[in-house]
Length: 115
Length: 180
Image 1 (cartoon, chains in turn blue, orange):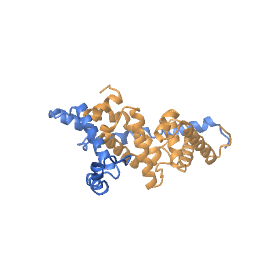
Image 2 (cartoon, rainbow over the protein chains, first blue to last red; image 1 turned 30 degrees about the vertical axis):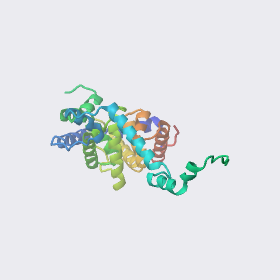
Image 3 (cartoon, rainbow over the protein chains, first blue to last red; image 1 turned 180 degrees about the vertical axis):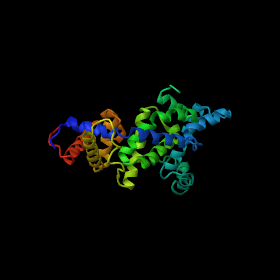
Image 4 (cartoon, helix red, strand yellow; image 1 turned 30 degrees about the horizontal axis):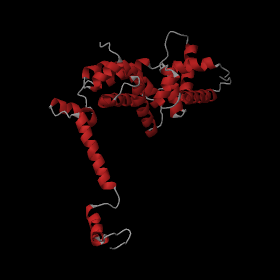
């Protein structure tokens, strides 16, 4: 068979469109099946919770809330992520490693000069 | 009949408007059935695919964003569902022999056309699913390459390559000797 590309296009197109009536009947059955009750829609939680709060007069004051959240977050990050720094350890370090008496009674702790 | 655009109807559907859904569905039902049938190969699977696609449109409408045409989004749902179905069960054209002959044209023409239909149906059935989809979107739905590529989730140039390969494969299967 030695045919042109146009002929190929023609028979493909004809084949693609040959079942139009059957497709319409199938489509009618599909639409009829959708006449019944539809399932629940899937809502994203984050799409709707601000509006729910607005309807109940619990609308957050966004700038203040954002500031509070930001400061809280920074505080937590500094508190949890700062290495080797805790109240107990720093006070223990003071008691164990610093001799305050020499600072108090030494007349000149830097030069060592005594009267 | 609601004359609003597809996208306007989708915004209403996203708010749970069933009337908008029932106005939008008939616009695409026949074309979606045709697309699904061309990919799946039989009307029974196509019917289930399109029903599932419409239900997905309804259920997921609140998540739809009007960044792309509704048609592209919907066809992509149909395409993916049909492709999944062909992966589960191989493509099986039930009506490869074509429609009953039209009494108007002469009998020899009718027989020749029926034979052509049978050959092309068989050749298309043997194509890989994506090449078959490319043929269906181009010749069946007459979409632009860009839109068809968006539905298949690929670039326009990759889609053109897919289409060229599909046509070349069809020419080989039909023993056509010329080039593009």
